Length: 125
Image 1 (tube, rainbow, N blue to C red):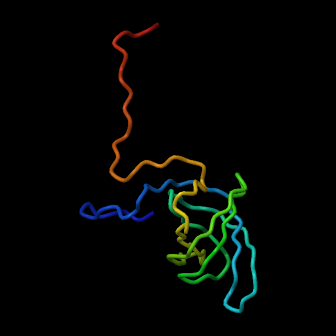
Image 2 (image 1 turned 60 degrees about the vertical axis):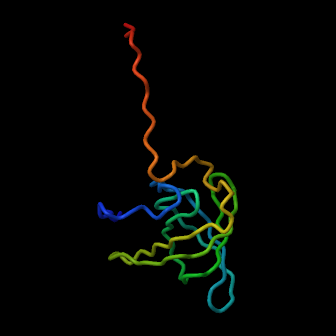
């Protein structure tokens, strides 16, 4: 995971959460042939995810994602593609519909302060 410079501002609309979720990815390759591959998330946020995938995709390509844990489906667009030193491909996707809760999670807004519990004034034994 990249370290942000202290002067950089978080550009994401919601914070990322590192979690591995099994995903089935549906799409079409450059020849128009349909494909269906298994993938897994590296990190997620309310509006998208970073997926590890073995299929060749390009920026701007439309994909259908199926969350294997909840059977939820969402349309997405590829916004970034990168490979690491071990030849693994990581694809950043953005959901087309922002109001779908694909991950079935609540995400804090960027810059939100963590909740703090109030300490009880009386300690129980």
